[in-house]
Image 1: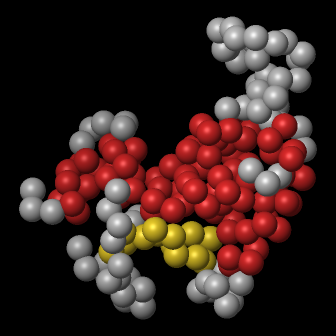
Image 2: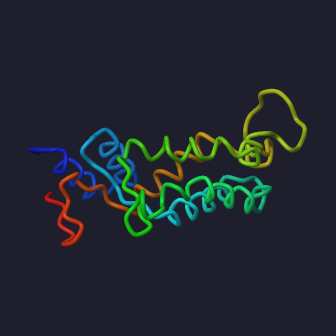
Length: 165
């Protein structure tokens, strides 16, 4: 293997469910790679993982959180700051961007609090503690986007779709 892209391609060929995760980790530490992300990618992935991680059918105030998150990230997706509703993120920056914009939303932070009134440490099962691990949620949202997209080299020509790999 001559370079990072060869390593990524080898992981993708593996019959291994963790291959995409490994690809994301490799991409995450390569500062020359970036991804183009739509605002709807972020909102859709947040909704998906909030529902999947909630011990209930869906978390309280889901629509409020989505609305406030959309408002928070809107300035990053305006014509002045993005290209056609997309924004370029270095792969390493995506998790930080998601977390920074979510942690200012009180209803989102409430998801990390137990509703059932139970205190203390216990064995966590789906029916035991009714909170969402916000760190895991942010990672799942970011990795969902990594899995559906492809990191590009900084030299990519978006008009032709070439990634110079």
